[in-house]
Every structure is written in structure tokens, then in C-alpha cells.
Length: 506
Ligand code: ADP
Image 1: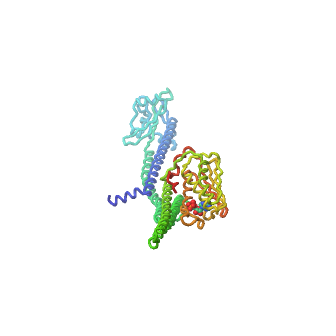
Image 2: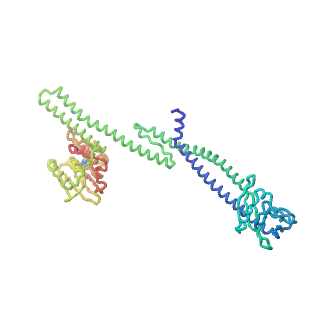
Image 3: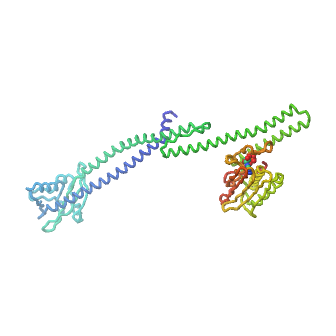
């Protein structure tokens, strides 16, 4: 496509062009509408004016004109210039005729028809008869040979002696009115394009001014990329819609920045987590290669390497499941079950390890606590919480698991008398790979820092949440809230999350 056409298309598609065209269309429709209405009103008022004038002239004619024995006589003081002028004006367009259409002549033989009336043509006897019969004033418009229109008011005037009707008509030229209307139309027709063109020019510049700010915002937005997400679009402090857009955009960039940082942190954590067992495996194998001489030494090195490999595969498996869960590739398989029984089973399973750790594990469960949940996930969640509580509670401590039926949902709490979590670490413990420094066991016993991430995801997948209260040195309390869902929300995972059948292998 030729460049010039492309440029034209570019302009015609621009917001600026479309705004200007909208202005132009709006102005045109408004101006044409207002002009038409105004012209119609003007025509009506001119017509009313001329009819009123003619009505008055007709009344004056009746006052001055007498017809006696077929002779019209104009009664007025011929020495009075005002009166003479008035009568002359009345007779500019007039005719006096008898019922047969014959124009009357006065005593001096003057035909009672003016030149102007003659020019629009005499009335036919049929028309005169109709007017006289009608007994009502008649109005009609007639044109002379040059096309000048006249408004004629005709009616009957009676002979004073024998009540004989005569046809009398007076008229006025409509040329002046027509001229005023034509002038108005032409002035308006010339002004409209001028107003529209100047409106368009003004609109074009105003639109440019308004849109410059938008373009500046777009340019600033373009400078923001993945590597400099800390940049923000400066606010214009105008507190207008554009500032609102900038604020919204900046907030979105802020969220993206957080998200990017989390991903970056996550990659660092993953590399770190994977490096430790890999270094271990490498060390074991090197030891075996360079120093081992007996079969037992080789076996021990291989066993140690296998332990590290097991940890590696645990991490990979956990990460895979967590990412599948969070990206919505796993669907929950909900069934209606008694949560009290489920929790009691998990507590039973943990009694032996708890005894070994010399921590007392008790459960406070209602007889029935029905809920629509994914059994495997909820078991996983309770196990994670109960096992954490055991890990972080010293010998002689206590852990209490309780379930409560609330009006809006079910509350599960796992409470321990362990070491607690320092306040500044609390907001992070649900992050992946986060472990409170100095609290964890070392070696293969060391946790992955993923357990609470699963707990948070499972609660969220059931439209619930998990929160924690903790006082360092006294203990912690993890509370999971699972809402009682309305029928419509009972679909397989409103959070888009899906089954994690393999998750309990973790
Ligand atoms: P891990 O799988 O390593 O236990 P989690 O995600 O389950 O990781 O827990 C993250 C961190 O939260 C743990 O490293 C621990 O420091 C802290 N934590 C979890 N549960 C408790 C608890 N009951 N008491 C004290 N600290 C806890």
C-alpha cells in the first residue's frame, strides 16, 4: 500500500481525527436543526404580521368605502394629507367588483382595481360567487407575471340601501417577507460551513492538547520493561481521569514488580535448594572415587549419595505439584465427609511419633462436622500442620487440634506450646522455601519450606484461608477457615485449582 495512503489511514483511525469528526457532525446537526426551527418561526411570525396588517386594512376599507347603487364612494377628507395617504395605501392592491365579477367604476369613471391587483389577474366570477357565498373572509396567495407573490384577503361588502353583496379584496406583496427569509437562509448557509470549519480547527487543536497527555503517558509506559519495573509514570497532579489512569497503571506495575521479584527470589531459592544436595552427591562420589578402598566404604558413600538424591527428588516433586496446583492444572475432588473423623484419623497416625518426641497430642472434635472437601488435600493440610507443631515443640510440650462449626464455616486450629515464630518472620512463613533461620533441623531432616505453601493453597482452593497467631517462646496457633459454600459455589474448585492425587506422596 502506498505510503501516502497508509499515512492517511493512520490519521483517519486516530482518536484525534475521530473526536474532530464527532465535533463537526454534532455542530452540523445542531446548527442545521436550530436554523430550520428558527427559519420556520420567522416565517410564521412574518405571516402572522402580514395577516394582521391585512385584517386591519380590510377593516379600514369597510370604514372608508360605501357602495350606493353600484357606485363605490370613498368617504374621507381629501384635504387631510394623513387620511388621503391612508386611503391611497389601502388602494395599492385592491379590487371592488359586483357579484358577477364586473369591476365597479366610481362616479368619475375610475375603475376600482389597482395596477398591482390587475397584475395578478382578475377574479373569475365563479371565485367571486364562492367568496360571497362563504360569508367568511378568504385568504389566498397569487403570483403576478414576474413571480412576485401577493397575499389576498377578500370578502363581501354590502350596499347600504338594498343589502346587495359586492366582492372587495385587498392584498399585500409577500416579496419583502420572502426577501427576509431568503436573506436569512443565505446568511445561515454561508455561516454554517464557516462555523463548522472553525469548530473543526478548534476541535482538532483541543483534541491534540487533551491527547498529548495520553501520548506522554504511553511513552512513559513504553520505557518500563521487565528490567526496570521500579520506574513509575509521574502523576500530573491534575486529579483528572488521566491521573486516575496513571495511578491505576502504576499500581499494576507495582503488582507486576512484586510478582517479578517473587519469581526472581523463587529461582534463587530453587537453585540454592538444589545446589546443596547436588554438592553433597558430588562430594560423596568424589570421596568414594579417591579414598574408598573397601566395599563398605563404597556402600556408605552410595547410601549417602542416595539420601541426597531422595531429597532432590522430594524437592522436584513438591515444586512440580505446587506449580501445577497454583497454575490450576489440578482439580479438587470434593466429597461430603465428616471432618471430625478425618482429623481424628490424622491425630491417631501421629500418636506414635509424638510419644517418641515426648509431646502430648490431644484433639477436641465435635461428633459431626460435615463438609464438602477433597479428602486427600485436607488430610495433607492437617498432617502438615500437626507435623510442624511436633517439629517445633520441645519435649514436655503440648499440641491441641480442634474443630469448630461456625455459622459461616468450619474452623480448624492446631495449637502448640512450642518455640513460636518471631513477628518479623510471620508474614513470610507461607512463602515457598521460607524457613525461620536457626529453627530448623540440619541435614536430611531439614524441612523443605514448602509445607505451609501447600496448606495455604489447599485452604484457598476450598475458598478458605489460613492465618497464624504466635508468640515467640510460648507457642503458635494455626487457624484454617473453610467456608460453608452455597450450592452454586460447590463446583470443583472455584479457585481453578484441581486434583492433587499425588500430593500425599510428599
Ligand atoms: P517445612 O516444610 O520446612 O516445615 P513449612 O512451610 O511447613 O516448612 O514452614 C515454614 C517455616 O515456618 C518453618 O521452617 C518454621 O520455621 C516455621 N513454622 C512452621 N510451623 C511452625 C510451628 N508450629 N512453630 C514454630 N515455627 C513454625
